[in-house]
Image (cartoon, rainbow, N blue to C red; front, side, top):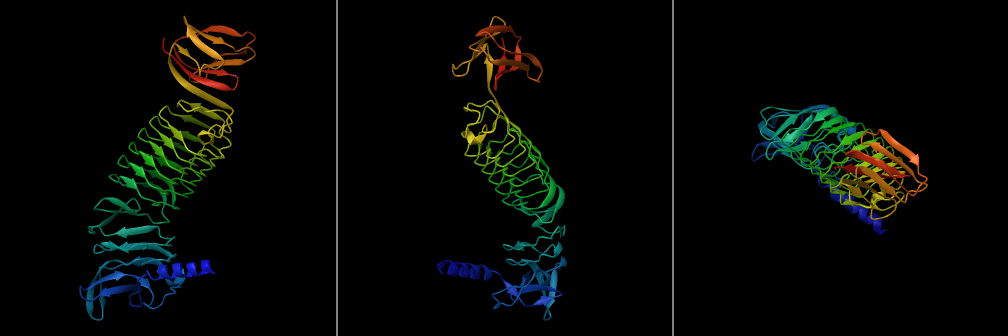
Length: 396
């Protein structure tokens, strides 16, 4: 019984936030300020009609062309804005035309306008403008609204510093080009954009927040800029087609569940700057078999630690070393460089392979002796001993 009462009170409060009117002119409902002779587009309904149960077919449909002025009872009113929830539930509204006089938008104006794909704004409007299908505010410059049925490629306006929370959520876009000015992609910004398959990210993005690209099921590959420091919780979770990611050197933290359920992700390279992979960041990434670890994190095959990054792995290549020798925590096997040779110890019955950095195999065999040496020139190599790998840079 207590739960039922709570739900009723919540719904009642939400409904009464809607400003409604029974007064329409040419099919558009307005609230009129008879003192200042201004008008705002509003929701259809009577002030005492608290149910507001009109269907989408009864709301604004097709094209809504808002005029600069409207005549009512012999007086002329300037249309200056939209009330809270003015277009709520207009599921069949497709095109909105906004005049130069409109400078105010209440909250929730576009709620459930799921078919809205195009907005036209008069070039003389001093507050709002359109760029590549997206609505922006002039002062301060910010992304204001993305029509939910927008599709195709979108280029975000240069000068924008933040992609707001849920800005493109569930849109039908296939590509987004993020300019150099953007530093932050807020939570849920591109959540559930199921057709998004290409993201071009500017070189100043430092933070990708929670759920920013989660459930973008068509996204196959993403390259992060050198500026990126933080990938938030669930930022790319359930990107089912994501097979390749390039984690930049400079990245410090990967949040919990950040890449969870990316079922096609097959390999990942962890940069030397990385200090934290949070809980289950790579949970249920069942194809993630290869981990190149350049960080100081202790990554072990089959371990649940460090976000499950190597839980499904069959190969971990770890450590980038500049110098004449390399050992891993003094554990066996041990290899080192002496007089132009790479020297191995405690490798009896192990399979040792050496590759150039571009993947060319230059040595491979199962070792019968406990130790042996092999000439090796200056350069970068991948050394594999059984299933474990080492990324080695020989500089002298």
